[in-house]
Length: 171
Image (cartoon, rainbow, N blue to C red; front, side, top):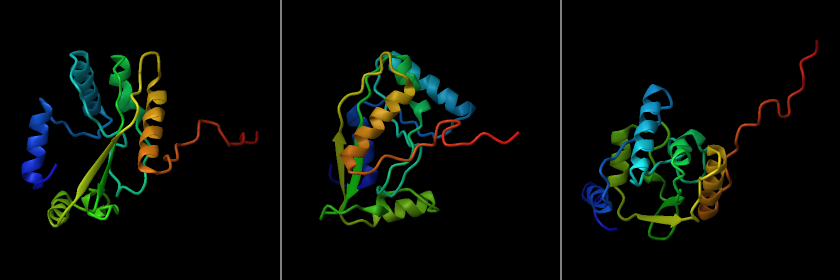
């Protein structure tokens, strides 16, 4: 894909046949509404894309994947297709200005993106992950492993299980 972001993004969305674009990292009441809409869309056979970290990084690490975002796929026994995205300069090095991370405002981020002379978006698809009979956590782990492998990154440190490594309080 070549061209300016303001013309490329709408074209890619239109050409993909997307009927809507929804961006939300909310895990409260609006998050539940988002999940219901995703579950309904999958139930109708639509394709849905999500970013399971719930936010972005500069592309040099993975954050913990939110397993709750996979619940609609599990509920519909939908196949999940992991896609790792890496933004690169022409020489193949990581293009950090493409990220919307840190304390940068949205408009500052857009300015950084528009000032890039040339950027490549490398998209690598991992093996399909079947969700039938799986838990959302198992699906999240499989997708996280696939994306980490594709990007050559370590998996995020997931929080320890309850009680793991903890001593009982003295009585």
